[in-house]
Length: 324
Image 1 (cartoon, helix red, strand yellow):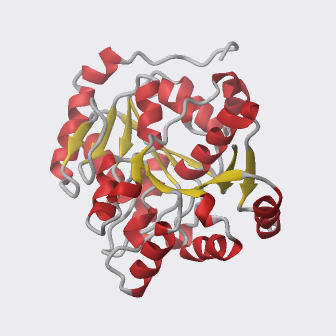
Image 2 (cartoon, one colour):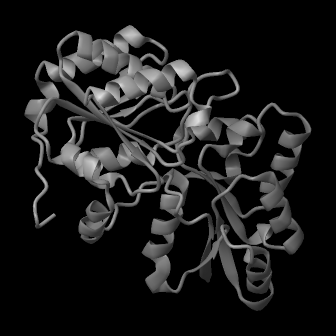
């Protein structure tokens, strides 16, 4: 039966959109189709596929309005719903939770991107519909040269440099969760860079923010970021870029999130042999170094440990050249 991958394709680049793109590309030779939710015409395309072909839909969104539309169009009963950590927005929210449960009950199945996401469904009697599927699909490395050419000159200079302790953190946007916590840990990153700078550790960090809006930043944080940038400690990579070539050229990737699914960024970093430091808010893959979320001293100590030798000896920096 034909498979149709449904979701938002990049740009913008993010864990879900990258998975959607790579999932479709991995199945295209077998005749898979797609519905790109960026298009204004997705309802018409989805409806046409429902009435004109025998197919299954791989739905990569937990948006209630979209799932309801799929139900009304008759597509949901032929769909596998992928949960990339979106269900957390529905659990414990009364009518919204009940509607979500009703909708996913009508799907062929639910595919969660990490084992820990099963618990929410199991406690609501839906465990039999759930299976785990890793969101990681390796990037196409032949695309690397073109990706590197798209990077700003300042970023290329950072990647080519062999100076200092080179770190990287990526975020889709600066945003706070319902508890007021910085979702991607940019606050914690800046505090750690200031600490390492004071300790004479010569930190350098590439901070990628795909959808940057300076007005969202607290004024104090913006001033501190600018100060670090002026000192050459912080390099900003603002806008839509594929990030995976960076993992080959830094000492460590940081995932300081307040919540998470099975992070594609972490999986990519591991795939390319880059050490990862991450918060302990969810189970992480083997080999990831964890710190207690919100424990700034513990994070600082882990980063100081990298400077003391482990990461630099385990992961030599690979210099950009004409063949990459």
